Length: 149
Image (cartoon, one colour):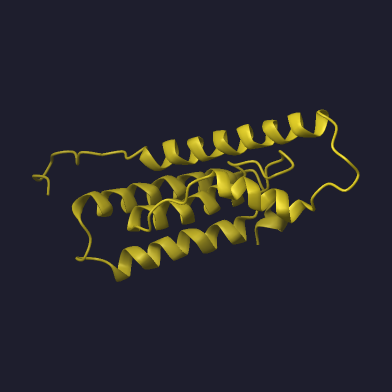
């Protein structure tokens, strides 16, 4: 707690942003490798897209289940729906209703886990929620009022 009249210290946890960027880079590398394979002369009997996606998924290690991975996963989904992460076609998508759902889900986690989190987990969740809410507010300014309803 801060003393009366003293500004609260703001701690920004950018770790989830770093992990999201690393994941994005891994996906780009996988896509580049796929393009190289196609350019090397694939046959007409190439594997279906689902098999390609499975092979790419096998290359990426699955992180251990943890609270921070859960928060990062939900935050990444919210960012994608806020147009901050391009989709597979390279174009961003703005779906405020979906983004709000992910943000609200994180807020429920915050409420239901109050008093049961480690301090680092609490700080991470608070910072992620704050950042997502700020991005949401900014994104909603750029949507015509008829679409925002």
